[in-house]
Image (cartoon, protein in one colour):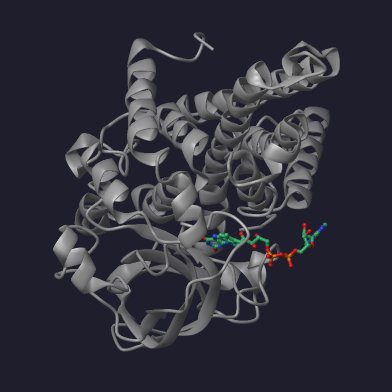
Length: 421
Ligand SMILES: Cc1cc2nc3c(=O)[nH]c(=O)nc-3n(C[C@H](O)[C@H](O)[C@H](O)COP(=O)(O)OP(=O)(O)OC[C@H]3O[C@@H](n4cnc5c(N)ncnc54)[C@H](O)[C@@H]3O)c2cc1C
């Protein structure tokens, strides 16, 4: 992987690895059981700069490339997917649309508190009737004076309770489908303002909080249990027009671009999970004795682990390549979908394989692999299911083929309007 990684990348990865080993590893099992959001670790991660890795320094970030951010997400996931998705949803879904599509004033107002990790962010696209079909958004934003009045609900929103700054979609022009969807920056206080004030992070009192935006109860999930997933409700929530992100009607297109980048993040998270599971399995099988020898010495066990290691290497190539394309200003939507499809499915295969070679021990919470398997499953669903990734890949392939046939070199820009938050 040295083809992709510089000495700076490796140093960053080592720093995150040391933090994971010292601060996440000892508490990951307990957090999975309790479902408590890991605020203490989040504070340290903010101090390390991990909530603004690809953000320019002048806006309070680390000013590093996208691949650096991908390495952070991957490394955190080796220890705990909940820590990793908290960074990933915050960065690629909450912060990056403002960075990519915001006005200078919006960037100056909202990026520094997000990039420093003083507050967490997220994005609200999914609704009860609009999941894979995100163009079916029902949340409505009607013009009202110098702003918009928003009514509706979003579901399954990562960081919805703990976060304060969100980008959400709403229909501004009904009857024209996805072209009638716009996006807005909305702020609401974190669910535990007192706790945040005690900790000294998680709440910025002078944000323009929007009355009528509130988070629902925390979801009780199979995996990512320490990550905060909730509904986000809009009840006559009035936002000034200057908090509209991009032009009216551009919300859907912008979200599709946001998801392209987000998918590289989910691929990295999946990879980290697979690597964490493989490491556990290798350690265990090198010690466990059956039939008078280490189970590692059985060829069937070796082959299973060799297959997982090969899958991981292939997934890493896909993921780093997609990040490299993005860093180098080349089209990357198809490659991001490929990386996400392959790595999310590999993380299920890897975690299941790790449990298999660890036998009954792997099935108990004595070892992290059963948690990792539960954490891996959502990677095949969030930010577009595997089925939706195949649609994105197939439609892009088709448009590339058509372009080749028509000698139309601009076709890669016309990637398909397939949603799947
Ligand atoms: C823990 C968690 C965190 C999440 N975080 C966020 C977040 O931060 N922000 C956000 O906006 N959303 C978030 N989501 C929502 C997530 O992105 C959606 O759950 C996902 O896009 C799938 O939508 P759905 O659940 O409505 O499934 P559905 O769209 O109902 O899909 C159900 C099944 O039908 C299949 N299907 C649907 N359409 C097609 C088709 N055209 N062709 C073939 N098969 C199809 C799907 O692949 C799937 O297998 C989160 C979800 C979870 C569980």
